[in-house]
Length: 436
Image (cartoon, rainbow, N blue to C red):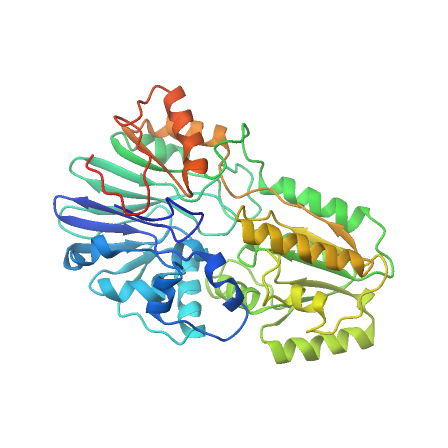
């Protein structure tokens, strides 16, 4: 059952029905639909969220709610778990299963939004298994992506396995954590279906390691003259490995390091509680608007050139810290040739692209130097997808993570590897149900 993430980049949700027992993979959010709410306290009701198509349309599944045995969450990005506060109570009898960091992030989101879900939460580490019914067993296999504690999710059935790979890259030199568990993937042996991350399947690349992004940041931060200039870096708040690199470079520059933004506070707090990193002894973290204003006033007085500021706003979200700094809602003394570093890629959605262009133009009008795409993706390229298919040798492939323009290259790769459209490889739309 394709419930979300097959027409758009986001609000991912897929369900499988095995002999009358159902397992859900992810319940995500369509971020562009709620982007103006990300850094403010405003909330939307469940009905409003459905109306603006911010959460998956799970109507086809609701009448089967008592058959749902588990909700599996592969990693802590909002497009994979951000819909849980609005959808999970429909399936309150099913536990939510995720890695330690993923569950910590979920708990912080629920607290921030003052929402409760009745589902039991179960922490499962990469390399562990759990039975969710007499006939179904779930296994998490270590994966790499642009956040930590990511896994390939496997449902073991008497008919074979179903593997869900949203999202992954094959990073053999991660900055935090271990490389993917190739041996375990190869040992699965009878993969009936692979739900394949096809976001960048059109690109004939193997996605570079996070260590490449580390060198790119090092080149900009340590190899470009920034004496007497402010340095402002924005990246994905969940990208804990990237934040680790930024902190280390800031320490080498001898600058005071400040993190500004609610989502940074949320993700870093979750990573610390999960025992993955310890940033708070090196960095001042300021989460809420009134405190951010006070901190920026202090920075302006002490000298912006003494700081390395890391803030939200990599997609130019209207409520983000960087956007408010640029438009004057948060006062910041921009000076000629201050450095603004976008350590990210623009998510390929029209609203994001337009917003980023406007923000960059505004910052340039203030005299800033802009450094963009200091980044490597967390998503598989075409050659990563090929390697995963070769490792798993699945009988069926379902490309996912976007509309037809995104899933078609995944289909074309599968066909080039000998799979037949409609027989072995399936292109789905939100709401489609197929029988394998």
